[in-house]
Amino acid sequence: MARTRKQMAQINVVPMIDVMLVLLVIFMVTAPFINPAQVDLPSVGKTSQTPERPLEVVIKASGEYRLRNRAAGGDERVVDKSELADEFAALHRDAPEQPVVIAADKSVRYEEVMHTMTLLQQAQITRIGLLARPAP
Image (tube, rainbow, N blue to C red; front, side, top):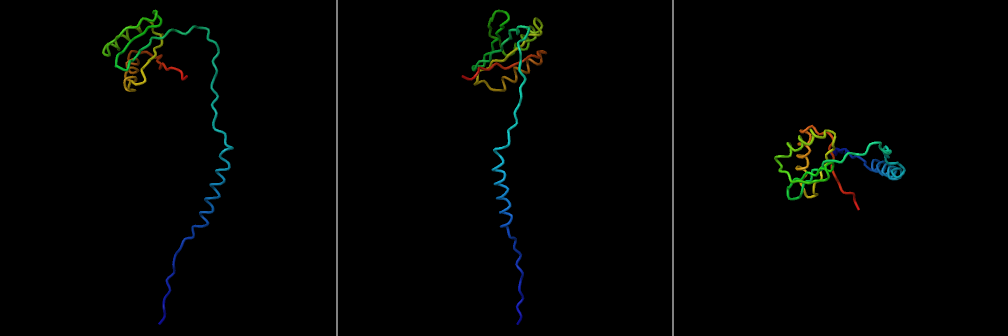
């Protein structure tokens, strides 16, 4: 009786593991020598014009909106949310180049800030910024 032998197909993964370990060591050794991308920011000299005093839109945590006009002495008044678009349009007609900054409490939802920015853009105000307190 003759017995037939079956051939066993095996893949030897040891050389592949050796190659992967060598590549890993190469990457670990060369990684500290690669410089991260550095950004050269432009510097600003002194401007010849004094900056305009902005119109501030203050959004309180309670949902109250206030307008503070720094150009008119810093008077502050409470404005209803439905009247914001009309107020922006009227103030933009008086001073079309006056910048507007939004000062929102940190607990105010981002959606409210974006809604205010949309109202400003609908009133054709192009100089919009966000007011932030510098870190201590």
